[in-house]
Image (cartoon, rainbow, N blue to C red; front, side, top):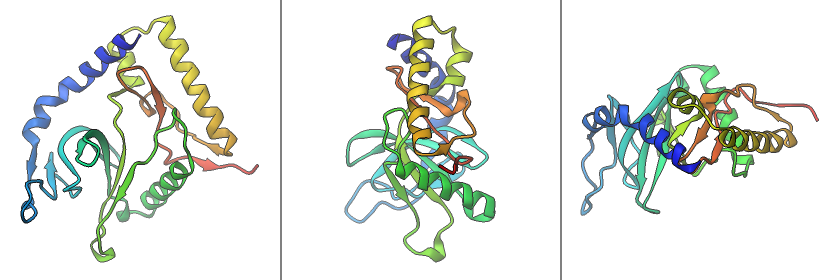
Length: 204
């Protein structure tokens, strides 16, 4: 089962790897005495996440921002960083705040967590917010497009989805946007529910 997830994840990433390699470039001067950049450019977007997070690679983007993978130099592991620019519209602000507040309450292996939140040091310069999360190589939508799932895959994914939903609903939260692209999967077929921007806290 894990081999199928690993193969699908590699296929999903392969189409973007060449473009990402040419699109990433350092735009800030290195810190004095150091070699790691403070910010990098990915497809025209500045990611001001250094020096802790470096070596960015493009993953994808949606209506609310771009997602890249990066090396966490503190843990020496790859992570996902979502850049959000929510301050242009009140709706974007509300959605971002709602998602952050809900995810900070949760701690479950089938729900994507927040490892770190980065923002500008001064509020006057605050234009973007960066949310650092566990890197998941693909999602169920891409997996379904790339291959037919075995019965074992279907049962295992359904089991993990139901575990995550049980935890979410026990906290009186309604996700309201559950779809294959919001179900992240790694190379060992672990599944995590993501994107709580449309979620609501229900009356108990």
